[in-house]
Image (cartoon, rainbow, N blue to C red):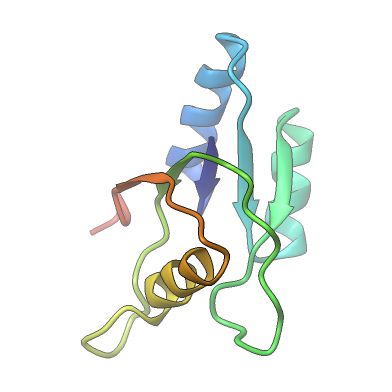
Amino acid sequence: MIIIGCGYTGTRVARRLARESRPVIGTAASRKSLEHLTEEGLAALQLDLDNSGTPLPALETDRILYLTPPPPEGITDPRLERLLGHLRAHDRKPRIVYASTTGV
C-alpha cells in the first residue's frame, strides 16, 4: 500500500500496517516530512502533486490510501487530478481509498 499524504493520520495507519508486517510506503512532498517518515522507521517516497514540472515516480501498487487535502483555494482538486492522470497514463488501476484530510 502507498499512503499519499502521509502526515499525522497516515503515519498512524502506516505504523499499524507495519506492525502487522504489511508492506507500506508513505509519501510526502517536503524533505522534512520525508525525514520524519524515515525516523518513524517507514519506507518513504517523495511525491509532490503541486509541482507539475517534476515527474511523478512509478507507483507500483494495487492499493492507495489518499490523505492529501485539496488546495486551500479553487473549486477543483488539481492534486488528485494529477495523480489520477499519472495512473491512467501508466495503465495503473489500484484500489483507492479517498479520505482527503481529517483536518476539515
